Length: 526
Image (cartoon, rainbow, N blue to C red; front, side, top):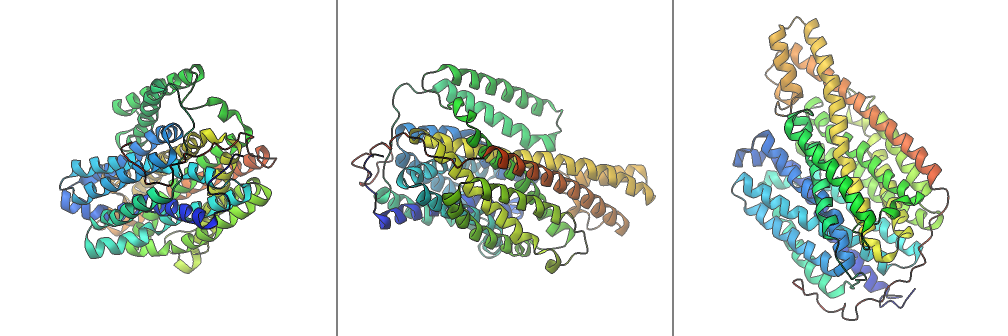
């Protein structure tokens, strides 16, 4: 390893890590607290179900499409510079969201936030890769970083509900502004700069990657609402397939590709990235419907549902740093396989409960679920970062995070399709048994399962027999979706345990010497 200006400077390293963690916590928290604000946004901006969906997914679409671009830009033009630009853009997008007076303005500002998130997230992990050069020290740092990330996701509902109730929906965006401003100022002073790659920029790869991933995410978002055979969804899926095939062909031919396809042939990296995809598929897909279960079946308010999830937050915050210590000592195989197994057990456990369960009966699942997630996040990053050339750390982080983002979108789409199909069939049968006229039964099924129907929560005024049938059908569909996610996670745990059979070792590429001016404030425009 080459000389490093932070080697042995533990206070400075701690400040670097704290700066990265605060920025990451803000971006993770924001993407979750928005869900608590949706009813208020609907009332104020007359958004409707479709509009509210794009308030959420407008961020995810841009974020997923630009993650790989953000990682590559950091590798080429400087991780610190791109990270600070991303944090600035995210903060500006938050201001735009808070001031938005119309639905298009809010969706557009959410897309700006997505651009900022895609720039700062890969740079955050890449800076950790360079600052913490010792394997064990880096694993512990990644554990803390992952714990903070997970805490932002888990605390979102608990923070968002009271904020919206007290100050209105704009407050969930205003809280980002002081944090973002302080993060930019402190980051400009303490973050070191690294930039290794020069030469011709892979513009065709950038365009094809953005179009391919963006079109794929769009199809997955629109599929459940528009129908998988609609012209819009099929057109987006076709465009995604063609663009991604062209992207791979281009990346295999250019001298300095945006994505080094050979990097994916590494057994350990491939297993870790699949683990990230699988845990997001199973967990975030299932958690999406867990909120519906708590509110529409058990009758929790949004704030109560948020506080009910706090045990999972505690489990995650304990497990993530611990998994970093374990991964630093024995490698990522054991904690990652154990985390996937625990997540599988948690989903299977949730499928055992119905409408009459009390919180005390089911609450054991929540810390178990959070601990499983915490055990997964850190080993995935440790495995990828310890195998990759430091010059491509941003690209590697972006690929890993893109896989996790796509896993969550795929999980919501696939598990949602399973739940909806099972619910529709079961509800039709139950309504027929209750002697509900066929025409009325069809309306109930459509209202309960269609993208704009509002779900079973909008059946409050329906006859008791109809509400009971809808709840029973929803639970049948939810349990099947949970078992599907559980099975995928268990198979993935076995696959990871088989493929990651040796402790990853760092690539023997020397760490590049940082920019000697890195301690000076960054010029964001430069």
